Image (cartoon, rainbow, N blue to C red; front, side):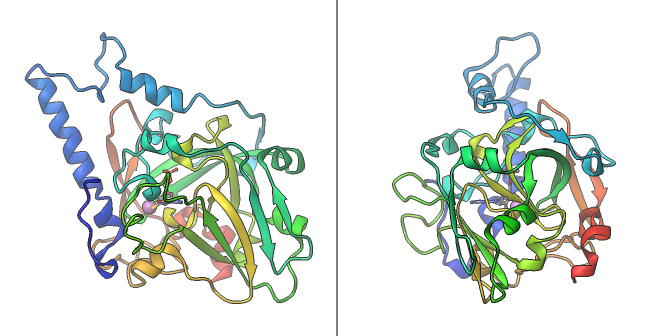
Length: 324
Ligand SMILES: Nc1nc2c(c(=O)[nH]1)N[C@H]1C(S)=C(S)[C@@H](COP(=O)(O)O)O[C@H]1N2
Ligand SMILES: [Mo]
């Protein structure tokens, strides 16, 4: 591990994973090409595919999923981000504090995956991926995606609305909040602080039950027409397009219905930088940077971006503004 460990009160998402460091490294690699050295990470037209490119392509080679695109979410005002770009620019701290964790995250073990739905519900359940596919009709939704670090993409998810899970498990009247817990196994996950036991692992996120019942709140089992690659949070992750990306916990193993607001990962690390609500808001700067604009990442094969204005609720105010 090559991160510098800091006490938890000093860590932030942006510090652990600074995209400027990542982009800086890519520019450095480009300059190596300029002087005749090639990088295994950068494709060169006319050259053979590198082992790394082939490995990346293998990660997105997952079983196809059939689903109709929901006509309400069939497009946005920006092109869909190129798949191989989205597959190699991720946040998944369980596997490291850098953007390029796609290879390390392949250690995630998907066999016999179970998702326990428990707590204040009338019908607790333990799902596996097959029962999810059988019980919930899949749809495709093309959503904007906005990270709190001020980069954005447009991603085509496959899954089902969270409100269908609510209907299946029937929360009791005491249930006011929901906690989502990600996969965590210190034998397998190697990210910042895991072996020091000081960061609040496992990764958890939470919603108010009314937020979970909103039409936009989505559970994805796929992306780009096939099952989720591990780096995107296989086999099941949350997608909340009006909130910053960190609210969308990956690789979920447990969903619990609670009476009170749960502690969550980033909010516990630094509440002043990552509030529980975390709605995309261009007028509310992060303590260390503006949220008025974002770097929209769309075209490949190498990372490049366009500066765009950030929209209130990430452009989804018609659906969610009445919740706040
Ligand atoms: N379990 C877990 N879920 C997570 C994260 C993480 O580190 N661990 N990172 C979050 C952040 S900060 C972002 S921006 C998105 C990134 O999703 P993507 O890599 O599929 O684009 O995942 C979110 N969900
Ligand atoms: Mo993020």
